[in-house]
Amino acid sequence: MKKVTATKRTVMPEDMYGTINVPEDRAVPFGAITPAPVRQQELFITSNWRIVRPVIDHEKCTRCFTCYIACPDACWSFNEKEEKMEWNWKFCKGCQICINECPADALKAVPELDFEDGVVRLEKPF
Image (tube, rainbow, N blue to C red; front, top):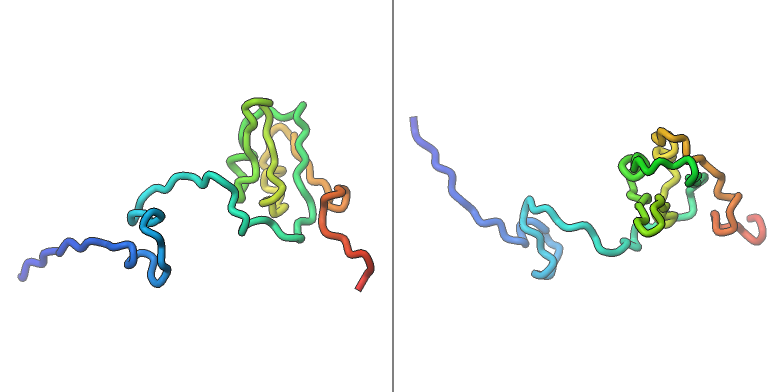
């Protein structure tokens, strides 16, 4: 039986990113853990299709962070100064996972049309 030896190969950034030209200061080593973004990614702002939004009752909220953990779009954060949960409306898709998972029943789904800044309204119908 012939012994097979593995050859060690250095993976270069151009191998990882394909045809995308990634600046050297932004290249990430293959398999590395990257730090969280330091600002919001404007490309991921939710469009005009959310039907409901979660509204929190801060009196009922126990700050268990279930909404924070359950949200697939990371729309919940904890305001340490005010010691309360805050919702980021820009990225919420209205999936209601946070509402369904809240053990304190502190979140409720409220239709977008109930808010001034809700969905875009047409001045005249089609």
